[in-house]
Length: 307
Image (cartoon, rainbow, N blue to C red; front, side):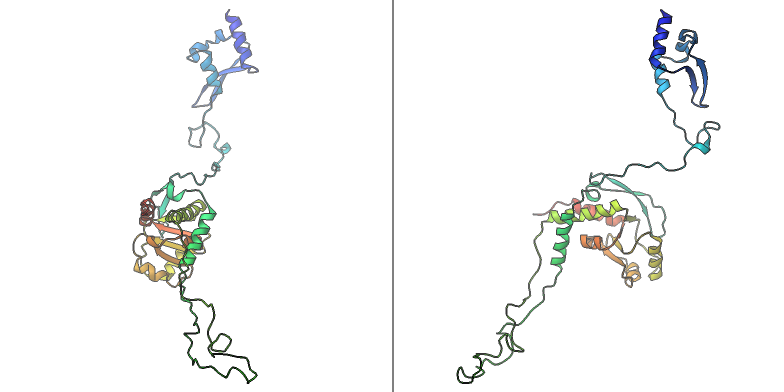
C-alpha cells in the first residue's frame, strides 16, 4: 500500500527526479534520488503537514537582496537597476504624496495633496472655456468712437440743395468727410461672458492636476529668500531642470524681498494664492507653491459654492 502511494506521488510531481530540504539561510539543498521510496525518506519528519506542505515548499520562492547574509547569493549577479513600475493613472482622485523642499534644495519632508484637487480627470474643453472666460473678462473695453452728435463742427448745410452741380449734403460731420463721425463704431462695454462657478473651479483643478502629472509642480516649505538680490533667484532657477518660465505662489501676501528679487526677471512671476488662475498656470511650465499656498487652495476648492 505504501509503495503504491509513493508511485502516485511520484507521477503527480511529473519529471522531478530530486527531492531536497532547502535551508533559506544558505540556499543549499540536500538531494535525494527519486529511486528511493518516500516512506524511507521520512518526509513526515522533514516537512510537517504531509505531502501538501511538501508541494507548497517546492513551489515557494525566496526573495534575495544584496543585503542578505554572506554567501547567500553572489552579489555581482544581482541587478542594481531600479524596478520599472507601471505609470500612475491620472484622474482617479487619489491623494498624492510629494516631497517638500526649498530654494536651497533641502529636504523638508513630505506633503499629501488632496486627490479631489490635484488628481482629477483631464478635460481640455473645460480648460479652453475657462481660458476664454479669463481673456474676455480681463479686456478693458474702453474703445470708443464719436457719433455724429459728438463730433465737433457746425450743423449748417454746407451749400444749397440745387444748382451747384455737387452732391447734396446736409452736414460736414458725416462719416464720408475727413474729421467726421464713425458709424456703428465701438463703444465702451464689457466683454465678459458668463461661466458657472463650478466650471471655473474645475478648470483650476485640471490645471493643477496637469502640472502634478508632468512633475512640474514643486512644493516649498516657504518662499523666504535671504535678501532681495536678483542673482539668487537666477541661480535657483538655473538649478531646476527644463524650466523656462517659473510661477511662484505664496499663501498670503508676497514677501517684499521676493518681490524685489523677481521684478526684473521676465521669466519669473509671483502670485498670492488668491490670484492663482488657469491662464497663469498654463503660461508657465513650472509651478512652485508653498505649503501655505497649497492649504489655501485646497480650502478654497472645498468651500461650498454660494448660489
